[in-house]
Image 1 (cartoon, rainbow over the protein chains, first blue to last red):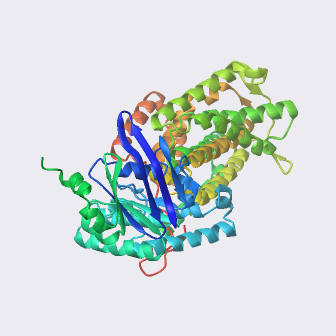
Image 2 (cartoon, helix red, strand yellow):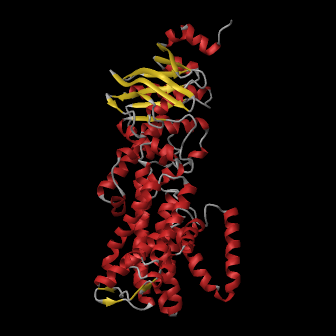
Image 3 (cartoon, chains in turn cyan, orange):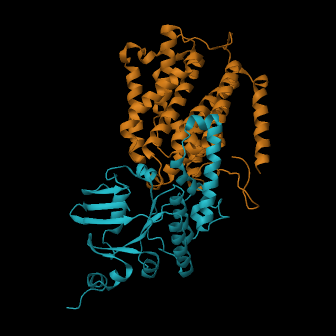
Amino acid sequence: MTLLCLTGLTKSFGGLMAVNEVSFDVPEGAVVGLIGPNGAGKTTVFNLITGNHRADRGTVLFEGTDITRWRTHRIVKLGIARTFQTIRLFQNLSVLENVLAGCHCRMRSGPAAAMLRTPGARREEKAALERALAELAFVGLAGQEMQLAKNLSYGSQRLLEIARALATEPKLVILDEPAGGMNEQETAALIGTIGRIRQRGITTLLIEHDMALVMKACERIVVLEYGSRIAEGTPEAVQGDPRVIEAYLGTED
Amino acid sequence: MRNKSLYIYGVIFAALAVAPLFLNPYWVDVLNNVGLYAILGLSLNLIVGHAGLFNLGHAAFFAVGAYTAAILNTQFAIPVLWLLPVCALAAGLFAAVIARPIIHLRGDYLCIVTIGVGEILRIALTNDIFGVTGGPNGIFGISRPTVFGYVIRRPHEFYYLIGAFLMITIFLFHRLENSRFGRAVNYLREDETAAEGSGIDTSHYKLAVFVLGAAWAGMAGDIFAAKMTIIAPESFSFWESVVMFAIVILGGSGSIPGVLLGAVLFVGLPEAFRDFADARMLIFGAAMVVMMIVRTEGILPQRPRLYPLPGPGGAGGKP
């Protein structure tokens, strides 16, 4: 079954065509990689899916719902969470509170309930705390709850972003270069984490430049170049595709 | 550590509770002003300190509350304390109407617009808008507040009224800080894009916190009107907004103890140095410059919230 369906997605910034008629599907339960040379428009596609940019043309369907013009927080609530290429944590807040941000959209109590500290609000707060701790343990950051996010290593900050995304209880997580700035061991651990995310029944769409990771973790790959889709298929098929090789290595003429 | 500070707060509270017995009415009135500015500072702290929205026109909401109380009390003889929710509603509504189109503006632009709103309102009040504000002379003859038939008249009586209002404010705002709402506004201060991307409706929260802070300032305006019995536009000048803003920034953005200390330093201390009236502003300005260089987060900055964590590594403690 198709979870996410992009059709004819187009976005230009001034004269630059960043994304041009891009269409592809993300099947439910899969790990899909989006690759391409620098400036191919990968992150722009992510920003169009999550509502950070508005598409000029085309549609984004999520579980059959057209979310093309929705605002980001509504899309998150519907079930798409993301991480950012340039890490965007709440640097001056604790690791725990960063994850609690993800729990927010599954909570309901407002300012009045907070001031009166109603039983409902307290119950909800307790459940959110447990959930945040569980997500931190899931990505391997247990025991660092009270650290400030800015004091974590680069690799740990990436993991914290993933924990925050998972705390929103998503159906689809979108990871923008999750291995960026990670060393080899951290990358290997990340591949394990992506596998465990999949076991939880959460679909993953990721951008990554580390080809070893992409080939190991993804079962489907979409290749972009100059804003257009040039190939799509299994890792093996994409690796052997002459257009992909040309895009990455250039031609000798 | 927390126990120690709790002990310090206990001593300060006890000292303040008996202070009017040892002070003359002049000094009690100074403390009343400190208390009022503390309430105003705490309400602005929600907007500036917690949500990071630069509001340099907070006196406008204070004014809306004060004028609402003054008009309804003098025209319809409604007791001033009954008007507290009405003043909150009026100031909150005014804030909602003006903030709705401007709230998405970035820091510096929002700041300029709020200055403009504050000035427009002050000039409108001076020009006797709708013929109900009394022009530059303002409104006089506002009745004294009564609590269970007891008329509050003298400074030391107001001291306990304002003190009670301040305590309630601290209690409620402390709870608000340590809640889903409190965290949400902190997230949008830290990184709006990340907050929205984590599923937080950032424009909703900006508006909500702005309206809440304004409504609280409106209630402070009601108490102010009752205390003064005369209000005039000059009480709500740009300078008042600057003082409230400085209380928050200098005391400690996002910190209740910081804002309280800020109110003491900005409103109480100048009275203590009245003899040096000429040098006062110079010293104050110099102190602020030094502060902004050596301690930008304020004298008592916001402290991380505590959560009841399980296990030996838990930072423990209830928030």
